[in-house]
Structures are given as structure tokens and as C-alpha cells.
Image (tube, rainbow, N blue to C red):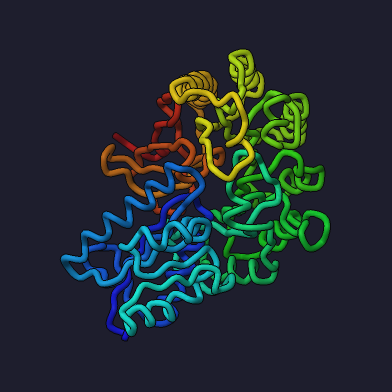
Length: 442
């Protein structure tokens, strides 16, 4: 019944969710089904959802409702997959009648079977938590020169603001042999980006200690991988072995994403984060001493319950002292089912938004100074493609991860996607750089 159907996919949320979506697409490709990027041409639309925050849940439901408007054309079925049904299926299934099939985070193997049943019996199907994790081939939705490798799922950290353990369950490291085979099957990559809720804890659930260094070494041995980037490295598990591996391994980009979330000890304790302001600053000093030129990105939450004005100001002071290369800031989101939801001293949204804005202003100064120092220098830039709006090629230096960090816009007589070019920087703003290749003649 499905043989003649054309599928479309919309994936929402983080890069970890993207990998799940790519595995769903891999199942479809493996079975020979047609997949289109034109939603109007799809008979079956898959909406892979995020449920981390209230805003993400609203976006997911709105996307399903938007997809439902295609039923006046070729659309016949909508599949709702991922985090939203995984956590909220009891409320979601009876209410979101626009969805025909519901799958959780690890139910990809139930996709086709559930659709067949929905067509045959003309009914809506709830297949949440009926499948299991799969490690088949993926269809990349990133540019072909870089890809994400999700090395684990779930989380054991139980930060008091976070729903992930209740959505994704306990921390589960994926088998190393599966990951090596998956990475090898992704083709020639300029950049492989390792992701998980907590990449640094890879292997601790099975071996009792982190095996992230071993995994990096195994991946580095693959001929199809040029560079490796590490995201979501929790500060309390960044040990000397990992630091040494980053320092000595030429395939590992000198870049770490470390989600500090706050700087002040009292707030960190309320968040159930492991670490203190002094320990974070000490870690940063060690990283910069052992790995000269390392770029460090982080994320911070503003307006956590009971956060005083003095603590908000102290976080801004921490930023000035830490001088991080890239940062993201988020207003605390009060999520039902989390311990922080019950805390007294919830802060009004307008104050949270004001604090986020103030933190961005501080980081903008820091980033601006960092980028101004690059003017007149020649740097290596990985070309990600063409920015047609500016009429320039666009790429990234090693200190920028795709989609979340700044870019380098440059003129060149030619630049191939996935290739590295020497770019002389001529201009900078507080976020991006601008320049030209050495051979370019205006």
C-alpha cells in the first residue's frame, strides 16, 4: 500500500533530533520510498518534534496544524514523531487529531508498520514506546561536507530545570563499533560533530568511566574524517586525558562547547549543576594553558528562580573574566514536571528577558574585540557554500560550529563547498568576519 507514496520530513529542535530524523529518512531510502523536500508533493509528512521547552512544544503543534492544510492537495497522512509524543502522548493523542501516526524517540522501526495499519484500518495509531533504537544508514540533511554523530541518548544529570531525563530516559552510550561503522558510512567529511546530551560521559554507563577519548581516537583513524568537533561537554567530566587528546590530536578542532549554565555557586546548586565559579574559571585557565588558542563556547540561563540582581550582575562579571569565544543566553523556562517548577521566587518574564538582553550586550563586546583582532590577518576558512543575499561565499573558522556560531563571508574567484581556503580578513562586526582569498582580484 505504501509503495506508491511520497514522503516529506520536517525536523524541529536540536542537532540530536536531526540525527533521529536522518535515521527515519534512512529507513525510507533503504526500502526504496520516494522522499521530497516539497511539502505540497508529499502523501505522507513526518514531523519530528522537540519538547524541551514550552515554546518548542507550541512550535511542534503549530507545525502539525500547518501541515494539515496540505490535505486539500496530495497529503494523506501525518506522522508525529520524537520528543513531544514520547513525553506527552497521553494528552497529545486524543487532542491532536490532525496526527495519524505517533512515534516516540526510539520507534523508527515502527514507522512503516504503523502507517500500513493506519491506511488498512483507517484509524489513528499510537506506537509510542513500541520500538527500539536503530543504527541503520542515515540520509544527511546537512550539507554533505559535515555531519553530526549522536554518540549517546538520555541523561543522568537531572538538572532541576530540564525535562530531558523524563523524555529521553537514562544515559545510554551507543555501542562504539556501531558508531565507527556509522561514521565511516557518512562519506567524506570535512567535519564530524559529536553530540549527545553529555558527550563527555560517553561509556560511563557501561565501563564506569568515560570512553570519549577512546572513541575520538577510533574516529580519528577513519580516512573519510578530516576534523572532529566536540559539543555538549559537561565541565565536571573534562579531565586531563580529554584535554591531552584535544591538544595532541590534529584531527580534533581546538574548540569545546561547555554548557556552564550559570556562574554563581548558589544558583548552580539550585540547578543541581556540578561545579562552582572558581572551578569553572580554573578549568578555563587549564584549557587555555594546555591547548593554546582553544575556542570555548557556552550557554547560560538568565532569571532562574530566586536569582538576585547581584547574581545576575555577577554572571555578567564572570563573562568579562572568562572571555568566552561564543555564547548563547536563554531566559529560564518554567517547565511542569521539573523540580525548579516548584521553587518559590519565580522571576517575571520581562525581568528575565531584560537579563538575557544585558548578557548578550556584554558578550557582544567580548566577541567584537575578539573578531576585531582578526582584521588584517589571514585565517583558514571552511567553505560552507554561497550566501546569495550578500553575493559572497560563506564559511567558518575553527572557532565556529555550524548554525550556532558566527560566520566568515568572503570573496573569491572560486570556492568549493567543504574545502578550506586562506582568507584575509578585511572587516568585522560583533558576530561575523568579512574578507577575501589571497588570489581574489576585485
